[in-house]
Length: 123
Image 1 (cartoon, rainbow, N blue to C red):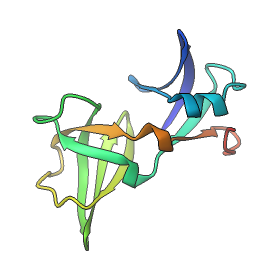
Image 2 (cartoon, rainbow, N blue to C red):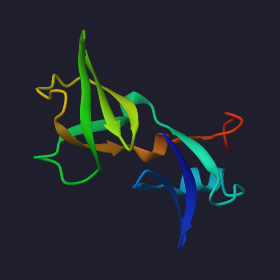
Image 3 (cartoon, helix red, strand yellow):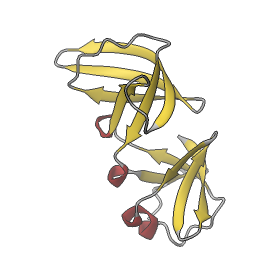
């Protein structure tokens, strides 16, 4: 996801199209020398995302199902989130269909941040 870093009180936040994600301290420490308002790309592995129907999940970012692909023992779910398409890979066989509203939860310990201009990892 393309966005920017912002300081809010004592924490570092990734912001993208109305989406705001608090970065865990381990990630914030890695990028503490990066200025706020720095344009970045937030990278998350597809196995580190959880997609749940909006009717049963109240936490996480609001998104919409784009595609659902059965892939052997996995399901690859593509969701539209903040103007971007992101993929989730899970063992769950889902009944979700394109257009369904969902909530996406991130396992934030696995976040990677990249400089938007250079593509280099921020450390």
